Image (cartoon, rainbow, N blue to C red; front, side, top):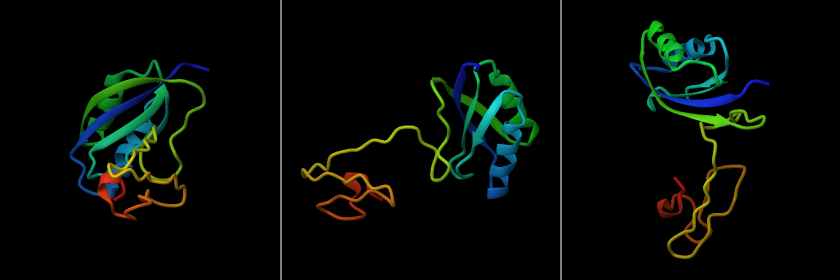
Length: 128
């Protein structure tokens, strides 16, 4: 199996959900790209999982040919069989923080985090 890399891009010019699909398809059309993820047009970001040999220029050109502007932000090597999450946002690391008051947000797999002292919506604990 070829070495893989995760590539983060800033994408400018997206104005709707159709734009996210258009950019996703453009990136997935680049030879060597395994997956592309554009979470929302408002974020203006895309993440690509690709073979290490995929050139930055090939990705930015594909986005530009689709009618948008792109800038490579970061390239990181990927080990093992890592894939993007099938649902939810674009993330690759879970951070569990302690509440400044001493409470701990419990690990929940069925919804957003919640502080066990302050309840849902306590921003200091990381809950939205």
